[in-house]
Length: 153
Length: 126
Image 1 (cartoon, rainbow over the protein chains, first blue to last red):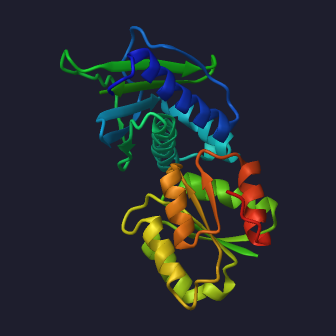
Image 2: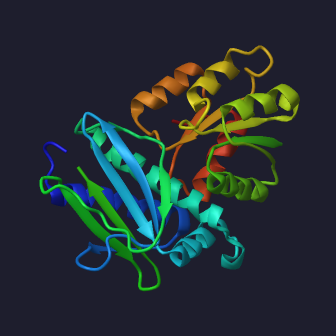
């Protein structure tokens, strides 16, 4: 995204994700760089960002972490949370994070359009990119749960 | 009091329903714009406030808003947009189309409750 360093973009997207989680669940997560380990956890929410700037946002978490988050967001007991519930919640987290980031870019006219988010689930998923693609990798956690964020552009 | 909650996310519908329960309001749910208009055609006289997402499949929230405000039967039901689309241009477009209020996601339950009360009391505050 023209005019922004990777550090600034990481700050914007990770800040947006942290705000979404804290506002909707009350949980405060610390942000750090994702170094080493798997690219993604069991569930990955994805959205294409298209327009003046193009990119893709990935937010991933273990199913257990999503059940915890969902429970905090809704008050529903973790045991009663279904896979459909957490698929929908991860889509909505991606949607709100991209929307919040979009607002943060708005002042700088770095506008992109939101597209329909979707979720894929699996084990040992990796992100393979061409060398010239910029990748932002962050992890947000509090010791009990963690959420991984990747943005490529 | 009864709210019509229009959002393709079951999470958001659940969060809004929980807030409505606290305010002792009933809710009716619709997963997209088409379903919302179908619900209104059957029971618009029971609906006191519509909470409307912007980005939805089948028919987006803005088009639903225009449809509602163009209808003699539904136009007096206040509509609050509840959406990730928080840019000023979207807010202005929604207000021009007749939205009574606008709430950007993510929101706290307290923010949602305050906005609902504003709408019901006719004190929109952008």
